[in-house]
View 1 (cartoon, rainbow, N blue to C red):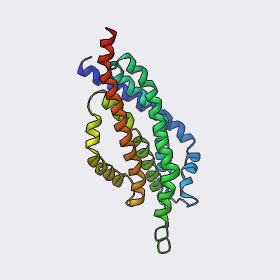
View 2 (tube, rainbow, N blue to C red; view 1 turned 135 degrees about the vertical axis):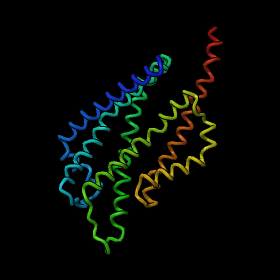
View 3 (cartoon, rainbow, N blue to C red; view 1 turned 45 degrees about the vertical axis):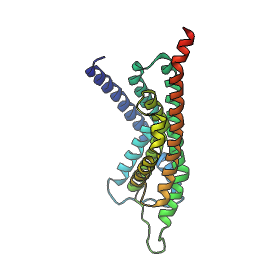
View 4 (cartoon, rainbow, N blue to C red; view 1 turned 60 degrees about the vertical axis):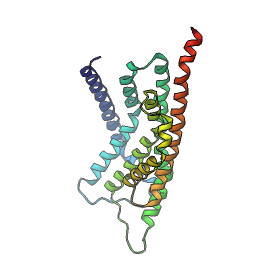
Length: 240
């Protein structure tokens, strides 16, 4: 396939992914009342307020869009696999389908970890800070944006081993390269955690610690990929 052919294929895959997000978001908007109730669980009874005419409507759109992205993940991952599949061997194509399922599971694990652990602890610290001097007035729009960003950040952050697997298969990275770059990886993880999370060390550590563990897991994944690649020529020589 020519370069323009690859671009056309990528465009079609992106359109299909976009349509999947739109359809899932439309369905999610129908259940937006239940979604708003669900996302308030980490607040532990803290009320939400609205200070703008369009505030509630945009908050419902945001939560529907975030839910649509999550619900459409299997389709998105499948389209990504469909784009790279022509460049894979048959054995690699067999492995790719379980990886799609694993990617979805890892995203849900990351988002679940954020929803049930990070958000309650982080909100308890942030809302309880100086509560005797300051009255908290949390708007629904700011809370949906805050919680939605964290959920997506944790979900996509947990994709690190899958990304490392494909980069290792393509020979772009090696286990030795990742091992030598630990110090730089820690700095990058801390910077990302500081950008994504609120400006408090506690919440940043809750994001940074799992990301570093996943970085170490990625090193193991790439090392296993390298061993498998190195064993291929020996197997072919034995067969001949």
